[in-house]
Image (cartoon, rainbow, N blue to C red; front, side):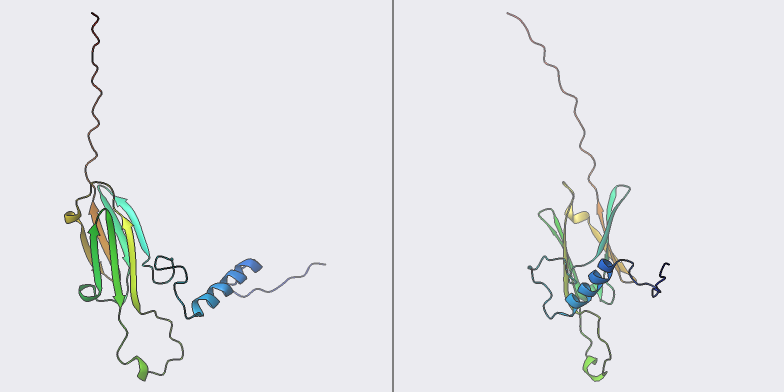
Length: 155
């Protein structure tokens, strides 16, 4: 005789999946955020999509709830692109009597390598609907020169 067990909708199938989910929830509740240094991929890391569109490298960064003119800084130097953003705390936050407060505030950063020979002055950025889009024009492919054959003379 087989036993049929009832699973709740959206629950993990394996006991390891449930354990992973419980560990993730426990870890997020800890007061420390970066136990392994500033570049540890925790929640302060800006999530991105990066892809090629023709001759342009496109980087889309998820940054909802920020003012791009005031809270975003993008720099390109030494072949690296750095995105720094800050989500500011609401002033009337203490008066609301929260039941749950999960929205993260504070600084976020992401540093990405740029392709070789990119003109840093040609990089553009725009912000719409919580998505920061950075467009990096790719340099033309270097022309591959055919080797020159040098004749050898005999004396």
